[in-house]
Image (cartoon, rainbow, N blue to C red; front, side, top):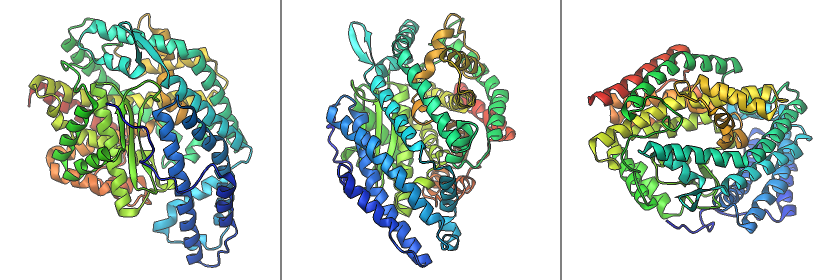
Length: 568
């Protein structure tokens, strides 16, 4: 389906090309006299409104670039934002933060409304270093280069040039020989771009390590824990890694034996590890995908479908695959418009269906938050919360996959596949998290050592039951296809933490569907100034990734998959 690539979906209320005017508006905030608590609150509101105008324009330019990385004008606009406006914002954000932090009225602000802001503000003031600004600009330039390379990657398939998402979709094919061919084609593409990926990552690791040193940290990992204001420790992460390895991986291995049997194969190879058992892709045209997802959302809650249909009608969805489009998928908020935009580079596959449902969890969360509290501010946005509602939406729609898979056996296979994905979300992001712990606490590693470590960690987790003989090199270099490692470092463990919450939501849904959906909506519209634990509690689940919690939810997940297999 062809979609117009115009920018009517966002508002440009400020001209970012007029740098002097932008700077003047920001500087005017520094000149304001703050002589009371009410003055400070008004000043914070004025600052928020200006920053949201800038953010919406920059967000729109970013999405434009991701939608079409080959357009020179779009790229120029995006790079102007990154190379000129972003450094300007960093410079003045530090001064604005300092002005606020030094105000005698800061401590008098209401704790419930401003407590989280104060804590985040304190960490930002602590972390800021002027010398890190050019490093952050260079970091963004490298990430732009990554998007361009991945967006332009094509592979010859049956005599035609195909974008990478098409090849990935062929890993779902029922025919094992097609899956194997797709796997090797994907690895061939990775091999072609590997030198560039290594060069980018080598430079990113060194840049990030220097940022951390400049800010007084021993390594980038420790620096990022403060940047992200995490409500748990490094040791909690290591404990979580071990708990999943102890309780989830054995269950995953048992499940792999079941899938191996259903596939009728003696040896479980990497192209079998991605295999789906449905007879065909769930859709052929993007319009059919959107029709079906709208129906599934509507059967869960009318509000969910109403939001999706509104986004569809107003150009807030871009889902198909095309050359020059950046890889991956995301949902992003437009704070002035009060809208959310879902971007995805999809070819017809089970994964693309689930990915759209996942992003709609984010979108519903965004719309509910906006309607209750206005736009989510940067300091309120925590991925452990955001991913609860995306994973949660996937599992709330589990019983409606027959919309795309009307055949009973296909329906069961689709449900098993979604629950198998839940398993992968418990260990896959953790292996990626552990990989990044290693990378940034060993910043002088070589590209060869990085590949070897990635293979080693992969074998401990998701590839534990897989015969990888002869493919060590291919698997070792496959980290290069994961944009999180490049563009959003240390955004991994949140997927696994939130999946434990989403599984609790499924458990609640099986007991009382209506109440579980209402709890989902209540949590998704909760006050984000609360702790993560309090928001989870409003959703009817616990923020808990201790060993007992991991063990219990692993057993629950394995039991649910077993029931589908039994037909019960």
